[in-house]
Length: 191
Image (tube, rainbow, N blue to C red; front, side):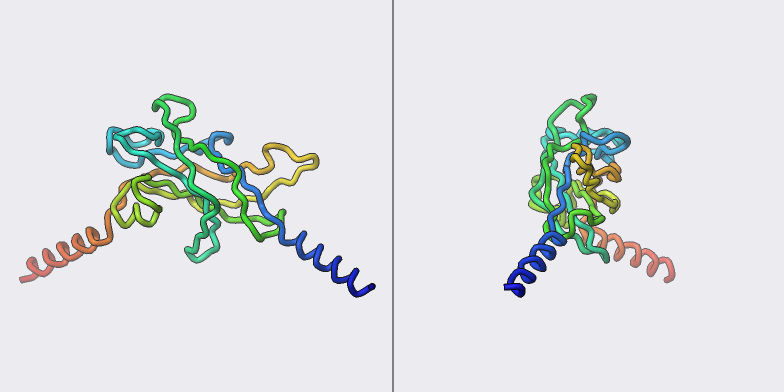
């Protein structure tokens, strides 16, 4: 009986250590420079203007990722749509997010997170990059649930998140062709 009780206690402690971490995946609840903006003049938007759905007929999404280090990212939950508001609206450059759950780490773990945004006509961020679409990602930032007692609504805010730019990333084949062109010019110049 004592062994069963010890096993139940050990299992309970192990389960408590591997709790889930909740992240409030919204940038409109944060203060500071947390908006996503255009990094190029394109589709009727100017550099530095906030990203909104509907500009140039485009729709944009954001997604949360855990940065596992070494360039490895794991998606957390579904994408969130950017708002379809006017450029001057206070909510321009923000998405309609919700809580996201990172399964596995202890509730008090510090995580490194990344937010990616892209043109929703592409299924994923990688597809947008490969297809020369509008895409961008935040710098990796640390996140820790404050675990206040009693819990506060601000406990799960992405406090260290900073805004970023979405730009048009050339297709890898375009970059390769440009490299070949430059190499050809260098070769011709030497002749």
